[in-house]
Structures are given as structure tokens and as C-alpha cells.
Image 1: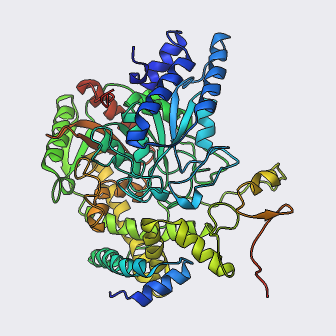
Image 2: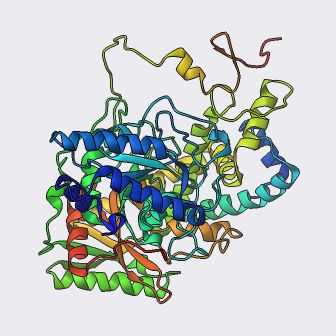
Image 3: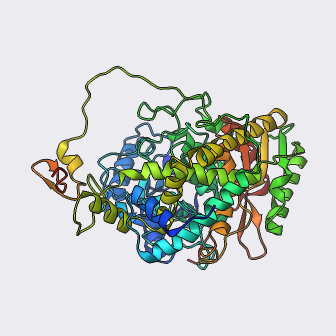
Length: 96
Length: 487
């Protein structure tokens, strides 16, 4: 599989990552190496009759009673906010 | 007596007998950190004052003859991807270089309930992505045995601190082998518990289906003691569970008579360092001489574990790391035009190269056109690997393999060749993929004096058997002990 600079730019846009031209250059080669190595290897195996396995343990959903419990203090949580005002997270204008 | 040379169990015993005080022990570790941390770079944050206060509090209880928990007064380090209330938890990343969690991870809370003293937060590969601790925003951790070499990773700070006596024990994390690899390179003991054995609440997520908090200790007895403190079900992590043998110290018996140990031939061929192979095979002979039954087995899917692991872990990472957007916590770029620009610049500036690479790999394999061919393919191979191990455990109880194909390599030696770097994890990732438990134990040194680690791999929930085998081996051979680091 060939991976192009345009592929990387599109993936970076989807992943919301700003990349420098040097990074795009390097990551294009890196990605091709990793994806080709991994997929060529995995494709040696016939998996036609195998089901994908997401979890190794028999995990099922866990429910609990819907009880109101004490949670974090608003001020405590906002301490880590890069910008805040009047008890809220401050963000750039989202709706025009 | 050099206090920092004592294992956790021995130090805890002497504290009870009032041979020395908790503040004395804590100060000995803080002094050691003061002397060595600049050279080794194991700690990102040292909690001098808090550690002192904790030590005083525990000593007061001792003086009042109060009932003492297991690890009362034992100084420990915590990897920087495990949340600690009021203390920077950076994940080795610029992205979280200002993140101070308002809560403790469950494992940290349990350690503190068990009387451990937190010395500080340990350096690691950025977001636990790496095998050599070369990707941290806070700089390279150096191997205490040779400052020109890597300590392994991603929990390099944890292993280096325990080996150099800057912590009596440490908590790291193991997603693809991080704790075992670093323990092997630094000559200490590292256990990857079965998925679900230890709560992940407060462990910053990398690949959630495989992440586990994992202890790094001086010896096997300490490992069991730390597991006793941190394991068990936690309502805050619905994948955590209790499974019967909560007292891991009951497994500390010197007895491997009749224990069926499998040696999979695939783990002893290919690019493995000759001395590593020899030392692990020597260990097999030791087990045999002590009454274990050694059987050669075959795990032909070994070579497919690494590519499956990289696809799956990167997919999960790209999803988990989407939360870092510069809005609620963490780094935010200074100048931006609009919201999307804020996201992109924040993430572009906040993440390092390895993290970006894995986010892109994950985004690629989860993309609409590739999901089936790449991600699902890897999940199918994962099932095949899982079944291969299940079958192997029909014949044997423990699988003995090297922890890594080589001993600690030189800093910078593998950074140019990605695949060469990823190959460090070739022997450790199957354990995470197949949901097994494994312990890395020192089993000698190579001709350069660097430690070799062997891995005892157990069935899910069978920490008891691998702890018993590791304990027996250590007792017979004497173990590696601490490292002096020239001071």
C-alpha cells in the first residue's frame, strides 16, 4: 500500500493534528513502513473463519442504581482549565 | 546499615521492630534522589514535603502501637500516567505538563491506605508509547547500570528508580510490555497482572483493552506484597474484578516439583542475543533441577503478535487521545483563529512525534476504507493468538521465555529504525493481547554486565503460579539485589 503526503494531510486533518511540512514528510515514510510491515505480515494468515476479538475477558455491561452522589467541586475541576470565566470553561466562538 | 538497600518487606519488618523510623527511611530515599536523579532522570516530580508529612503521620501511628497495614512506611514512586491528587500527572507529555488531578487513582489510594509513602512521580515515554524512554517531554531516563544506555520503556523511570534505590518499589503501567521490558533492562522484578486484576481508574488511558497498572520491585516477595495492596475489584472500573487469591503472598513458596513449564521454540530463534538465550535456557535447567518438568512447545503465531498489537493499540490510542483538545485541561496553544484551529495547534504542539505517529496509524486503520482490512484483521489475529495460548495451557502451566530479545541498548541506537525499536516488544505483547499475566525476573548478566530478564507467563488469573515459580528461582539463585550506582 502506498501512502502519500496527501493521505497524511487528510489523516492529520481528521485527527485534528497540525503538522509541519517536515513532519508530514517524515510521517509519510514512517506510516508506509508501519502499515506495510503490519498488514503484509497479518495478511499471511487466513482469517476467513475467525471472528474478531475485541475483549479477551467475558466482559458485559455493569449497571448500578441511579443514585445521586457527591461529585467533584466545580472550582476543583476548573483549576485545570486553560481558560475560564464565571465558573465556566472559556472557548472560542463556536456558533456564527 | 544502608536503608535504601532493603527490600520493601524487610524494611517494613524493621520499621515494626523499631530498628529505624519511617522519617529516617524516607529521608534516606530523598537523599539518594537528591544525589542521583539529576544523572538518571527517573523522577519528573519529587514530593519532598508531602513525603515527609506522610512519613511523620505513619510514624505517629507506629509510636502509638496502632495496627499497621502491610506497606506501612515504605517509600514508593508512581509513574506519571497514574493520577495523584494535587500532584502533577504529566504522562511525560507537554500536553499534560500543567495537569494536576483533583483525585487519586484507585491503586494510589490503596497504596496510601496501606501506609506507603509517595516519594514522587516517575518519568516515562510520552503517554506510555515507547520501549526506551526516549520519547518523554521531560527528557531521557538513563539506565542506572550504564548511563549511556536506555532503561527500557515505557515505564523506564519506574524501573530505573527501583534499580538505583531511588524508590523501594514503584507502580508503572504495562500495555505491551512497558513494565516487564524496563524491569528486564534494569535488573529488577516487574509483574504484568491479568487484565482486570488491578483497577485502571485514574490510569491515563493508552490502549484500554490492554492497559494494566503494574508493580516494579526489588524481588518477588515485594511484588506479591504490592499486589496484595493494589489488586481487587473497584466499582469505578467495571473491567476490574476479584478472582479468588487476593493474598498473593500465599504463593511465596519454594516449590516447583512437577510444575509443567513450556519453552516455546519460536521465542529462542531469530534476532535474539546469544547470551539472552543462554541465560534463559540456564534458568530452565535450574527449574528442571528443582523438579519442574520442562517441555518444548510451539507458538508459531508469535511473529504476528507485534503487528496485531501495533494496529490495535494505535487504534485505541487514537480514540483515547482525542480527549486532549485544549479545552478542559492540559496544554492550550497561545494563538489560534477558530475552534478547529485551536484543536489542531494545541494537539500539534502538545504531542511529540511518537504519539502523533500512533494517532495517525490509529486514524488510518479505523478509517471507513481500512477498518475491515486492517483493524478487524488485527482483531481476528488476536483471537487466533488467544486460542493458541489457551491450547498451550492445556499442556503446560507456565511458559518460560526471554523478556526481550536483547539487553539494554545504547541511547539513540534504535531511534532511526522504527521497526527495530518496535521489535523490543516482540516477546511481551502476546501477553497483553491474550489477556495473560507475566512476571519478568532477572536471570543473570551478559558479558557487558547488563542484566538479562526472563519472563514467566501464566494463565489468566494465575498470578499465584508464576509468583511461586519466580520466588523459587530467586530463592535458589539469590536474585540480583540492588545496584549501587557508584555512591
